[in-house]
Length: 448
Image (tube, rainbow, N blue to C red; front, side, top):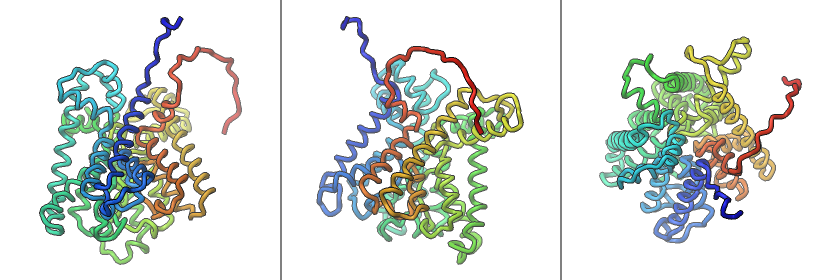
């Protein structure tokens, strides 16, 4: 009997989750080395774990200031985790396979297809090489531009390191920064009126958040938008709407508050940056704690939406939001099927959209209830923190360091879930046993 039993392997979701966990643990122990901290002491395991989770899940929430606490070694470890987390564990593994001329098996190809949200299994190796090559080129260009600003400020050596660090952090939508030398946890508030730095960071965030499939369409088909895939059209449309719409709303909400003493150019730059980074980079030039309630709510909405599928960004994704909105309007109009750009959306896509929305909202509500129950903190600050963790953003009203260990564990689970995807996260706990197919009798209930 035992000989007839077939050993069940791990699912793709479980392998992906295990890969992230291994990187997180490796990063945690490296950060615990005395060489990683500036005081030469061993950093507390919990602080190292939180930093490793935030880095690998490209979030940006921190419990110790990246510049003031970590040495160059520690910063390199953090940057390595950001790069690995941004590209994805499976993608990095496949690139290593390709470098050593190892042939990718069918199972690995299937995992890669899921990891980068590719619609085709053929040519996956070539796609990976393009992703890796374009990532390096974009990050190098971003670093070179940032160096023109940081070198005059910090000198050649430090200026180059700052350019590289912030370019990778921005492209991977991580939100980690080294600006703590000008004030702990200050992010980019000290360069809030430097258009070169801010525009470069915004472009890197947007490009990193577009997704690898969209890159191919833009590069291969140039301005012939009609030939773009439906996915690319939706991504570009939603990105444009959110950036422009968010900029206008922030200009309105902060007109008599944080923008009161700014000139028109500074207001537009600050509003645009505030619109771009919540999806899902986490840099900030404005004092998040002193934003109006309307701006905080808008920021939470943007963090919930996030970037695009198959990108370095988190959130429920722009495509999910548009599919859900189209589905609702189609049903209100009693239309047959859900249509976008004269294409019908499959029922499978709609089911997945409902799952993503439902799981994200459920996790956020549960986290809000637990943290609010065990700690007396302003609800708007907790709301911002929870949405930030779930969307792998990194924006905070400054309460991260004051959270109890239980609250921090909840945030770490949310960051992990947000990076690998809530559906993937839920599937990792599912048994691989084949379920017997049973069709139960159908009956209607009243809803709505």
